[in-house]
Length: 288
Ligand code: NAD
Image (cartoon, rainbow, N blue to C red; front, side, top):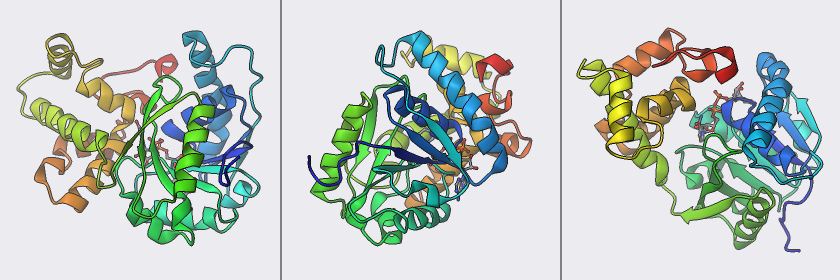
């Protein structure tokens, strides 16, 4: 097996929308997972959220049959990543926070351990400046929900080593995912294209040109978008969408990425989409 190959316990850092779903995906494929979050509320909610994702994934038939689930443990600090074979960072989309977390993680795992960032758009080359072994860092943009969508965007940064590219392929094969490799840069491919469209769809609602339901119906029924942009924004989480747009705006200067005032208003009101029960639509507890 090549050095850097992930085969054993995984650390997932950030127990939010993505971290809990990635943990469920990994557990369902038999990996023990240490799920790390600095927020006590996120830690206490995590086992229930992971269990709900697992049940949904099993119901949808997206996990391997008959494979015993890996064990889930939760922890508050990066120390818990010691002894893991790969680390997946899925904390809030804030470049400085991510850099700090990656530096803490790199300090507890040996050189040659695969470090993955699930950032939506911070360039991997930029994040690699925070770690002592930048060759170990790659980007994997898992899609939401991570246990349902098989294809992921893989970003090899300017300093990612061939060994890390091999290790990430092995990890993704172990998780039943197919990676499509793209070049580094703000928003990579998917967020660069999608987030601009989501922001614009929110502006259409802000201008009172159409309701969220009308925009989504047009995008779904005329243009073949699976759910419609406003439903997608609610699924992503409006706080994360605003953060990701800010990153894209800061790093490209492109005004199309300046978060819509309506989006920012919703975040200020705590209307964060599915995860808070209300965004552009309302959600029952069981739908979150
Ligand atoms: P989220 O807000 O739901 O969860 C983020 C979690 O990170 C929170 O529980 C928070 O407590 C934790 N956290 C923040 N700082 C931390 C630290 N220093 N140490 C440990 N934990 C910390 O966010 P999310 O939607 O899960 O997004 C996570 C990452 O995945 C972001 O980079 C986001 O852009 C990316 N992403 C999100 C989606 C999506 O659809 N939501 C899709 C693909 C990628």
